[in-house]
Image 1 (tube, rainbow, N blue to C red):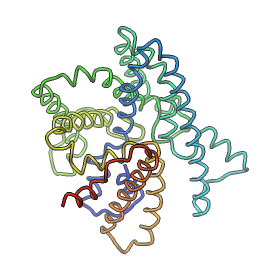
Image 2: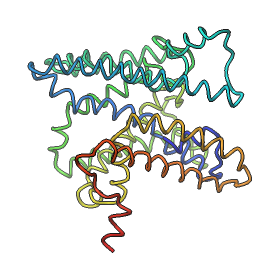
Image 3: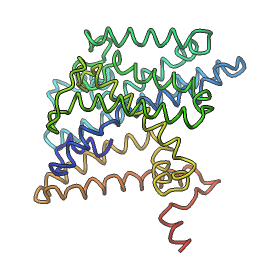
Image 4: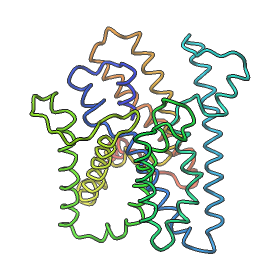
Length: 344
């Protein structure tokens, strides 16, 4: 997500890396939303099925939604203030105009507002999921909503022409929730079946990739009669996101015990993922600062990829410090860099 947003901010990664980071392998938004839905299902669906914990579970989700709403308000005000200081602020007629835009979540990005809405709706989704035939009904409702959104993408949006219209992106969230509902059945599959799922996912992704980017590689055009656009999310792009996410999930699952579980990469990613909300908010500011620095250091050219790497490492350092600070009674495992030095 950091690297993709830096590409969008015109940080120079070179003619080769820029399309690969910003287009060909881009899945951060879809992955973030899919995992959000999957996390709700894995953590809260078992509690929703327990009558003794159901009410408290739903209340905790609504509290979480309100908490994230507060984070959104603070972050939006801070971003607006920074934009004014940089001379890139919008046109506001009064302080009430500013407050209205913030309260209605028309400022400060729309990914967190989308997440707030979906968390607030999660008790209703879980209530449907726990009932017999509920997952099928939810899948049908989600598909119908997406189909309606293809013609009316800004229906139910908090602001027009933003990046994450709820009527479209709810489908990715719901897919994550449905996957969580079937996770035990998936986890019990034999390796051959998992390999078949991974092969199918990567095959679909490959066909969609060729259909979207064949002209970039001088290949014959493959017309699948799908459109590919992130804003607003189109059918082909949604399928590309989902096929890539499923491919990554199943492939890493098969490689986990043998290659990944004790690897530096897994330790690095887990540190970033444990405090995802705080890390997401921090990443907005890291990207903003890195992009501003890149405008002054324009002479670096494609070597600005160093700034991208530094931004990711800075975010990881923030996540590590936060991890240590919030776990005082159970000191976290030594970072893989330190652990490696100790072993040597």
